[in-house]
Every structure is written in structure tokens, then in C-alpha cells.
Length: 109
Length: 142
Image 1 (cartoon, rainbow over the protein chains, first blue to last red):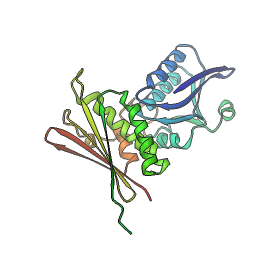
Image 2: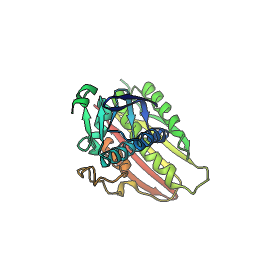
Image 3: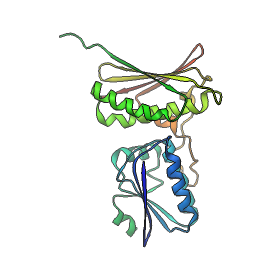
Image 4: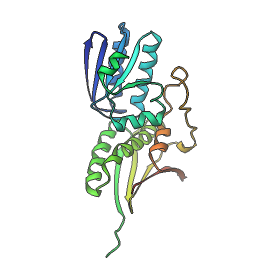
């Protein structure tokens, strides 16, 4: 897994490449926790290169989304690929997360 | 024409979470050798990760090294995976499903692993045989 962070006017883009599984989810969790300490209005998770996710990764998504929402921020998932979307659908996560086809759309909402 | 014989392969892993990396490599090889439909691999990987993670984290006493056996069989567009461990008796199929219709606020963190296995596989069953837990997962395709 590879994570890159980019600051933009609207917030922060977190791009995750590869797999989030039980062997490495804590790396993703640490990045999210560090971001959540700062006052961020919006986090955009760019999933265009995310290829696999298990329940360990889903847990980090849900925890981070809840924390950010509670502090008044917005957590947005962008460019999710079909295999990942399928897991979000199965888990009921698609209805509780804000999911956008691309970054431009996500920024406007 | 001779009837195709079923195929069989085995992988033995230790009760260490880093073994999941070996599992991923093993599945890649298996897909190649058995020509498994590529789109099924993430689902099979997911079911195996969730099942194995449970065994690795909860089945054994801490600081003991144990082995978990993974048995793969393919016949007639059907893959059967049997996970066998000598840990505490535990039937994951008895775990109740999470309520996936709850709002974000009410949604608890966690509790999805076994549910995901049941969703992505066609059949999941458990047997306790002597000192062994045996979880059987079946995936079919057409």
C-alpha cells in the first residue's frame, strides 16, 4: 500500500494505492488519525488505485468518517473501482458514505 | 474424452498475520495454474483473509506457534476451501449478521468479517472434528 497526501483549497486528498488489509491497515489508520488531529474541513479519499479492501480497512474508513463528521467536517470517497464498490455495497457502507465518481464532482458538493 | 479429475492443493500457514502475504502470492499462483476466473480472486482473497484473521487472532493462546491448514479443491467450476486449525472451538457461522441498514451514527465499528465471508462465498459451513475446527467455504462460477 502506498499513501500520498495532497493539500488543496477545499481540504486534503488522500490517495491510496494497492491493498488495505489486516497486514497494513494500521499505516492507513495512522495517516488518518494524524490528519484528524488537525482542523480539516474535508478529506477526499482517492480510491482510483485502491485494488483490495478487507474488514480491517473498512473499519478505518468508518472510524475516520465518524470522527470527521462529528467535528463538522466532510469525508468524501472518490473514484472507487467496482470491486471495492461491491464490498462497500455488501457492507451497507455505500449508503452511509458520500461517494463521488471524480474529484471535481466531490469538490462541488 | 476422459472426465476431468478434481484438482487439489494445500497451503500451511503459521498463526502470524504476516502469513497473509504468502496467501496472496499463493492465490495468484493458483489462479494461473487452475485458470480460475480472475474477477473471483478478490472475493476468495477476502473470505480467506477474514477467516484466517479470526483464527490467527482468537483461536490460540498467545505466544504459541501454531499451524493452520488450507486445503483447496477445484472441480466442475467449483472451488472448495477448507481451513483447519487446532484452536479453541469456534463456529463463525453462528455469529449473527450486522444490521447494515443502520445510520452512520448508529453503525458500530467492526463485526463485518464473518458477514463478508458469507456474502462473497456461495456456501460456508463449520464442523468440529475432535480437536479441530474445520471451516468449509465454496465458490461457484459458470
